[in-house]
Length: 234
Image (cartoon, rainbow, N blue to C red; front, side, top):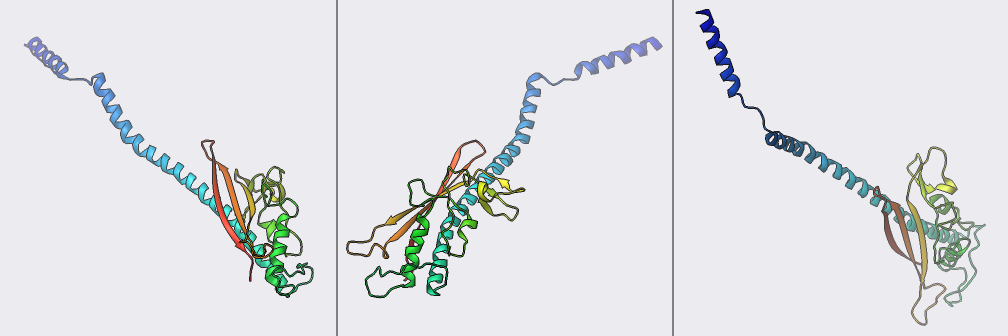
């Protein structure tokens, strides 16, 4: 009797084991594919979003740097104009009568001529290669021409980010603790001719082209260009 019960018990167990179905290779691979899609899908989206965010940030910084370079020339022009208006000692406002009205030392005329002289002296911004500078060079008292560099001088090839979040010429004003960047900036100034019969010494204009380049994470060089125009103060 006992042997019969044992035989029946083991027979049932063997039948139960035979009825158990294991995963096939195809089912396993399918499950792994589904899980990978669920996990890697959002991860890929997040990685792409982070890359696009970095690229957008770099483009915004480059646009800011290009705009800053043109605003610095505007600042220099306004500084010289106020100096000539106040007849401040130490500023050699040109004594001329460029519009032929018999009035000499007009602030608008004098400061305009002085601005063009400043942009020409040293490393001229009117040259085919343009010039480079930062806010330290251009925020001066107006008594002397600002310092400007050629792009290949080693003084302003790239810009560094200071602890105060200001971008300065790495070779000229960079210091310990500054963060080196791949941003480079060059400014090109061109004369805009006046109509025939106009006074080219005073009624002309200046076209300022600021070009900022930087290296993207994939190694490619990206460039942002900004064009601005200046005219003499009346």
